Every structure is written in structure tokens, then in C-alpha cells.
Image 1 (cartoon, rainbow, N blue to C red):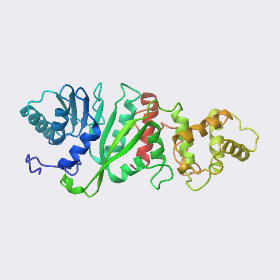
Image 2 (image 1 turned 90 degrees about the vertical axis):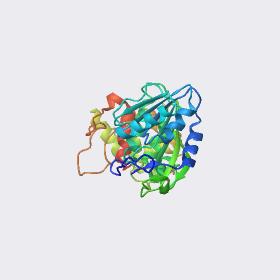
Image 3 (image 1 turned 135 degrees about the vertical axis):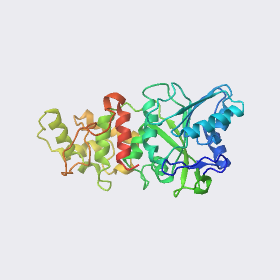
Image 4 (image 1 turned 45 degrees about the vertical axis):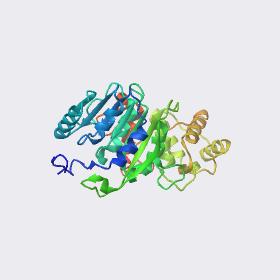
Length: 330
């Protein structure tokens, strides 16, 4: 039960209410709110942060969403009592409720189990409407570390590089379990996200196909990982494979780009974009398939042929990106 409001809290719903004023202040500082901003808050809880957001955008508005009707009602009452008239509150699932038509900043304290799909819904928004300026997100520390990871770091993965294709993350602060009611069993981190605009001019389906290969065997050099996907691509396109020394061709491309000795987990977005373009110039393209190449436990499927209710044609590359993150175990 929340001591300030008497509202019962459900751990099953991920209801851990942040009460540390110092963390609120750090989140607000990171948000760099302007008086006319439109703010999108996810997970209003009892309105502790909502009140502070509303006071920082006196000429703007705060759109808040929470799945728990009691929390929304408590927040509405709290802001009405404080004389605020710039709140728009919605009860619903943040992964299903439409986002505001426009928002400048997103501030989120949502259940950790939906952090990944929500972040990639944010990234999807970049291709569907006005770009947001920043997002201040409270995340489980382990997941935050993967978004913060740089090439060569232990936590750097396919999730990391796909995220970096569309956005960049900056550390704001760590949050101890005691900052919540009730205290969770994990530590948390606040990140500030900013969109990478414009996004690199790459076909995401092919980009992800190449990324799956180069991150499937982290300790092998790139030249040993390409030939099988080339054959799959030719098969899917109904083309014959050329009678060529494929390892030598790949090696020559890598050498010409100065990447012959590079390992995938040490390469950044710009390096990999350059590599993809170099392969394309030499007639090598990549088929987007699910699962690691060489896995014979099931059929190789085209990207998008999964159980998701959102097709690539509906959401473009960002839908694939979100599903890629989910499959990474985020």
C-alpha cells in the first residue's frame, strides 16, 4: 500500500512508485523542459512527477498514460487541487494507446518488462510524425547498460548497434531499490535518449540481415561469416550464385575498407554502414532471415514472418528493430 495515498500496489503490474525527490529533480534537469513544451509521461503513479512536469511547462501540456484507473484518478485530483489545467490523462496500455499527436519530451517510469517494446515504439514515432527532442527513461540497470554500450564493451550486442542506428543514449543517474515503494529486487538507471536525425540512409531489412551475421560469431573475423548468407540471398531472389572465389572477394572488400582484421563487436554504426555500401557496390546483398545462420533446427524465415501483429509494411524498419530487441531477451 502506498503510504501517502493508501492505494494498494501490485508487484504483478510492476507498480513500484518512485518517491526519491532527488531522482525527480535529476530527471527534470535532464529533460531541459521549456515553458511551451508538450510532455508525454508514461506511468503517472500517484502524480509525484506529474505535478513537477506540469509546473515546468506552464504554457504547454502534459499527456500522461497509466494502465491503472486508480492511479490516473489520484493524479487528476492532485493536479486539479494544485490549480493545474494543463493535464491530459488517459487510462490504458501504453503499447496500444495512441501517442499524443505531438510531444517534445517523453518522461517514463513504466514497468521494466515493457521497456524494450516501448522504446522502439518511440523510435517508430520518428518515421510517423513530428520528431521528439528527448526521452528521459527509468530502466532496469542491466538493460540500460546494453543501450549505453559502446563498440568493444562487454555489453555491446546486436541490440546495441541497432539502437545506435536510430538514437543515442546518455547516462543520467543510477537509482537504488530503496527509492521506490515497494523496493524492487533490481537496480535502476535513468537515461536520456535523443533521436539520431537524419537516420543513416540504409535499407533496414538488409542492414539487420548483415548485423545478424556479423554478431552471430563475435570472436571470428568478418571474412568467415558472409558466404552462406550470400547463397541464401541468391536462392531467395531466384538467382544463380556466381562461380567466384567468395572468401577472396569478401577479403578484398574488407581490405579495401581497412576492415580485414576488424571484429564485429568493435565496429560502430558508421563503420558498418560503410561496410554494407562496400558490399553492395561489389554486388553482394544480404537476405533478412530469422535466427543465426547455420541453425538447422528449423526453417530460415524472411524477416516479418513471425507471430507479431505488426508487419514491416505497417511500421517500416522500426517494427523489425523492436522485434529484434525483444528476441535479444531485453
